[in-house]
Image (cartoon, rainbow, N blue to C red; front, side):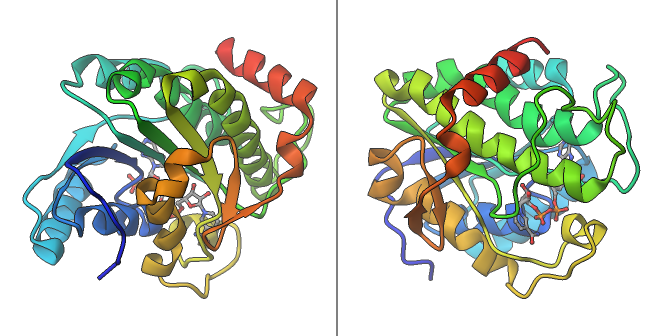
Length: 267
Ligand SMILES: NC(=O)c1ccc[n+]([C@@H]2O[C@H](COP(=O)([O-])OP(=O)(O)OC[C@H]3O[C@@H](n4cnc5c(N)ncnc54)[C@H](OP(=O)(O)O)[C@@H]3O)[C@@H](O)[C@H]2O)c1
């Protein structure tokens, strides 16, 4: 139905797969029947339901879940440590947009922890698994709605917290870190690319005050394409919209990219 080409048995890990776009991405990957799909979720009841729904819809019986809190470094490290076997495709997709400023138990502002560090820590923690499975790829679900990143106030300690501003900053950071990580993983034949999915009605978008006009399946099209098409392996460090490479000004400021990378390493 999706019409994408997956030529071999591949193991994929999708974060936020109980949400609107993440579930559609996981389903799109499971659709081929040759993809083992692992949903990285924090809520076991939702995770069980998503596995059931995706298996029923696709006939793929190789769909399962792992529990992880993506806003917490130790939880991600524990997932990577108990992971057995290959990992061919990591899709970083989970994100939140709380209306008021919140902190994790470690004292990190929640959007920065989940949307930015969650992607960064997952990629770092699974680098060895990806290297061993190479050629492998990382797909970072970002957004065209991005900007206002302040390297001196990433956690809104000085600026007044607005969830739209914190969200746009986090999506800019996804795109910048895609460039930083792609450079570091290039020699291992692990590609790292970012994309805008689509505007989809979800808890995340509702918190930001909009209802999307795309279906979750439409929102999943570009991430699934990046995860499965030859382009997503050949190209690295790039940003895509509507299955097309688009110039990303955020990745062009190499000094800022490296500074952000260093800040993330410090958490
Ligand atoms: N929706 C849009 O219009 C739109 C537009 C551009 C880009 N995007 C991007 O698309 C991605 C998915 O967005 P969406 O609209 O599908 O959001 P969503 O429906 O609200 O789903 C968010 C997912 O992230 C999970 N999650 C959040 N915090 C987590 C944590 N600490 N640990 C584990 N899982 C966590 C949620 O789990 P629970 O179910 O347990 O809460 C849920 O599965 C995001 O990266 C977003 O920036 C969305």
